[in-house]
Length: 391
Image 1 (tube, rainbow, N blue to C red):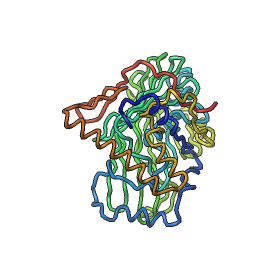
Image 2: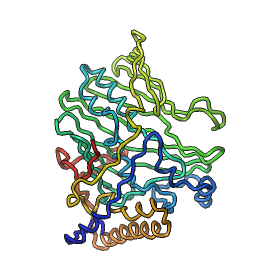
Image 3: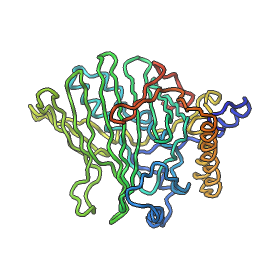
Image 4: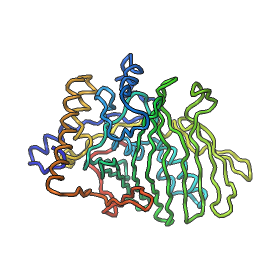
């Protein structure tokens, strides 16, 4: 199965089982098809025996609570599943401020509507996900399991953009809520301008009481040392009282000079609608980000080259599980999910028994002095993928 060399016929059978599902977009229709009538009660029952403060990184959800896709796919979809290409726009700016504002807009575009009561599969060690969208090629790998660390590398054919993304989500149970702190850094590199933008991520907050909800929250910082510009974005719920009411999809912030602290523009809006930028000097307001053009009516990727799909590909590893979930065959989905997870545990035991250390295939993995994980691609560019987003 996963991470083992297979014969040609076995590999062909595995890739034939690839199941691709619709990306999360403004409508979130995928989960609506699976949502049971008593979802809130079922979610609350999951945490009945979980102690506050517990790390949920390896909490195993029943298949009935899973989206039919891996967390690797969700990370990738934030990059390759878009309507308007905000990433490519970053390399077209005529000056440093325009490029920086475009990077801020792209960062917001990776924010997708979360869905209460559903979570993706926890990727297994060595799992990969490889997709191309036009001239952009995206490759992900689960480079660590304990702790869970995912790495992403994306490059374009024009040699203008490189994206390196390292993610280490740490979900914790707080009694009436679950908060997933997303550690790691995104690096957007505009190669023609020798500019590197460092971007962190908002946290995911799941409220169980008093009113069930799931939302992005916290502060995102974006820094470009070459242009000496910074941005601060705050994701928040407006006009809430005791956790009730309000609008959970607000974002506000500013772009400013790292050297002087001078504010260049103010940012305000809703990440699932319109985000505007107001020039601090002239007062002119422009649209920085339009969610309708970016993340509405997104296209589902398709397999272009069946033979090129790796047995470690997410849509193959979890193919049977996803197929069963989509058909609401819960017994088969649970059995298939258990097989994937049991295989991963068995391979881990075998490595431990042999004294072997897992080495990622596409990335090198390290920790800095503060304990944060860093991932470096082993190859300069990402090759075209066997899975594509239709044009």
